[in-house]
Length: 244
Image 1 (spheres, one colour):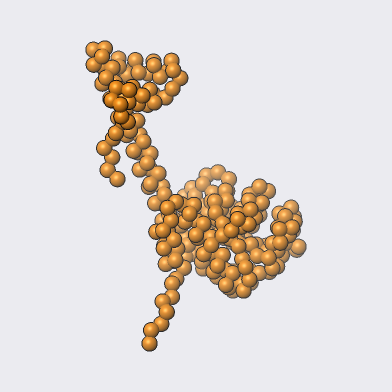
Image 2 (cartoon, helix red, strand yellow):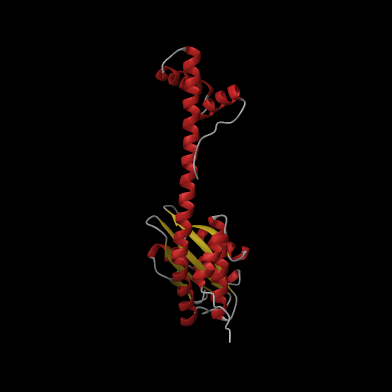
């Protein structure tokens, strides 16, 4: 007898990570998967948004729906709530019932007007300077019972390693792009200096001084002036040899 394959949350998250072209696309998939998992445990629809904080104030980056993003942005605009408190304290924070909560009266009123009566923020430490949080919203009061709460924490734990991997991949890609851009800029400047040296029979230092003066007079970046000079002479863009 064959049994259906059970796909664990971590496996699903890894599949989303592999298929996502950007970090935001991955986080959008993560929020949808989180909402589905917690909704199943709650027996009612629960929405989820993902908030990321890197050195500065928290920012909503994705959600299981447009409404989830809008709900999370309400909290970000007001500057405090269960998600932000969870990021600050690095511990889960819950609103059992907006009508009974005394900590964030303005947020509670906004949530109630939007049909949200309970909320849960769960923090995730990504790296030393970056943190994220899953922000859950439910239409029922006291939706986050111990079983639902444990389910949300379990999903967050499964998401933790995959989320850190996503950030590392994204950081590595950005560093590679920055390195390639820096190499291209340096190549253009070196080539332009070579042209100026040949035309003026001067030293490299003198050629650099001429190029810098042109850049200052035109109020343009040095690399842009160098690139324009090379492209005018060669009729093509500057190329670098950068192995991916």
